[in-house]
Image (tube, rainbow, N blue to C red; front, side, top):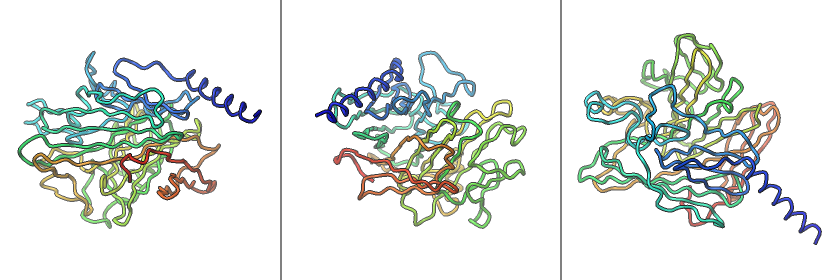
Length: 381
């Protein structure tokens, strides 16, 4: 009896802490919440703009495009984790003249909340969607939060509303900034060979870089870290990487040992065969990082993609037939890490145990486990 009261009291304390540090939802923001985490999305552009642990002040997805492009009052703008659809990067000159935006329409238009979360849901979930008039595509996104863990499953279904098939690309664009991003933040992944977007496209893996090594303006850098004044005169650089052909799950993590927080994503490589790492500096200092996984690794208009075809034996665009639909999904998670955490050496999705296992790099070699505890009827990986 006393033990039962203690459990109830502990849960109440956790809820009080959670509510005390959760911000009020802004206009257009919808929040999914369990006892461990809050996940916020905005209908203005569809971005995931909050993924915050209970009792934690730091939101790893607080990045916005401010300072990089004009933001018009009342209009959607790029922020947090947004979806690049129907393209990744710039349109052609002719497309731009006709109103096609950078990274496609999906993050630039208002989304509709077609299923709002309901109070008391065992597995908090929502559904949102948008229709892209220029691209002729629509997307329906379902986000399901774990019942008890800081994990979410995001499922997106893209439909071609036109009577003609077309090529397109779909890239997830999680972006991080201070205070989660600083010189101590470590990026880890199981990606392998890659290249610098601003450099030469490698004809084979023998001529490619190997994660985390890259050469930027002739200087060798370690992409796990992002340092102030590391490559003078460079404002942006983007490196793109593939995964081993035998690898079922791709993953990327960002951890800040100072704040003790880790943000991570995992997905099936058949859905997203590329990982693109964007680094942005302001006056030489660390400003933004993108952890962008998707269907392409070439940041160019479609004409260039068609001419290129493949890089490192991976396609740089995908195809959807007239009236066709394609579904893809990923898991996102956040967790507190122990002191002096060295980063992730290996990640395993244990479907039988229903968990994500994180194995630390040396010297710590500690193991962290996250229960999935997701609804059985949700689409599974």
